[in-house]
Image (cartoon, rainbow, N blue to C red; front, side, top):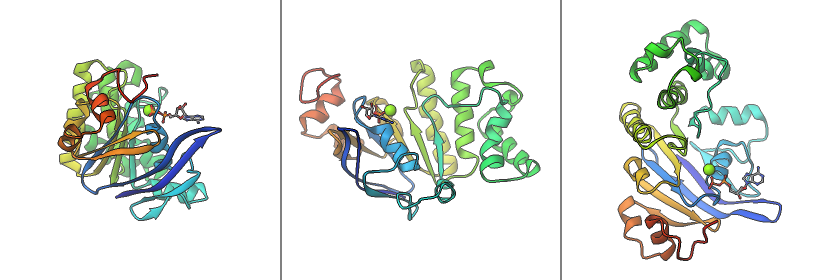
Length: 249
Ligand SMILES: Nc1ncnc2c1ncn2[C@@H]1O[C@H](COP(=O)(O)OP(=O)(O)O)[C@@H](O)[C@H]1O
Ligand SMILES: [Mg+2]
């Protein structure tokens, strides 16, 4: 469970988050949506403890990330999190095997021999065995996403965070990533947090949807509740219209 309580974040005079409160329910997947530039990635970085809020608190599995001062304390809390970044963010100089093993060996300090079986198990589950000796640039973007997912899941995190699952992918590969999230969810049963500006595509992986606008959550509920929302900004965003209360940048 992730609990975001009255979080504020500004950069200079630019107020990005202006009192965000949100509970990410355990075992469900919540999508955080909103137009480009509203602060979705900033919220993700605050949850990961890469940025610190100006005000407010964030709890991850009951532990206060905001109060964590040392990097080792933050790393301890981060052990509950698996992250799939926008571009999969693989290490180009490491093989796919070593990319997948990385969090176990480098972060959790597991010996190479014990890591080996876990790498094989997850590679098997995600149909990656035949690519283990390759380097990231030798495989397709869709496979790189799968490697990113394997790396996010190998530590068996309670919560999986995904930033813009489809950026840089054509629609077919994009659909593959949504299918991958759903398949992994049913196999490993994590709490999911997916950040996206793609509606309605993201609904297929979402139990709940929260929309950020003007620094706040303006809508929170199931996808059907969002679709039924009378809010003009929600409807404008859902329908991808340029006219309405949201100013298109
Ligand atoms: N490290 C930073 N320094 C200054 N401004 C930032 C920084 N990170 C994000 N911002 C600004 O915060 C706003 C929200 O960014 P972001 O969270 O990336 O938006 P999105 O909703 O598209 O993910 C943007 O205007 C961005 O320029
Ligand atoms: Mg973003």
